[in-house]
Length: 135
Ligand SMILES: [Cu+2]
Image (cartoon, rainbow, N blue to C red):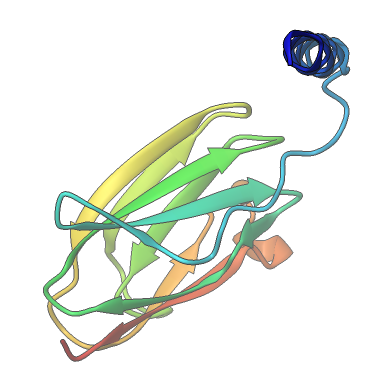
């Protein structure tokens, strides 16, 4: 019984050591597209990488406070939203530096499709949709 515990501990220790030695070469895994609920906020994780939002489509209930938490992998990106593509004003504009994660909190009131874009890479197709649905 003692031996078994010792073997287990040794294996656990070597796995930990190996994990710590792994070089940080692999790109970070894509975020889970399913939002989580934290203190009545609906939290969406987003990744900005190679001029793409991952994911780039979101479904949000109206009148629900949401948090978009974006990690930028490779560049300065923004998570900027307007009522639609032709709207003059942004509803909000989150800027995230390469290697950082930041968040914005917003409550959409009117159902419909909202336009998501990156101010620096919209021309490169870095756009998306936030679909606000009835509660
Ligand atoms: Cu960008």
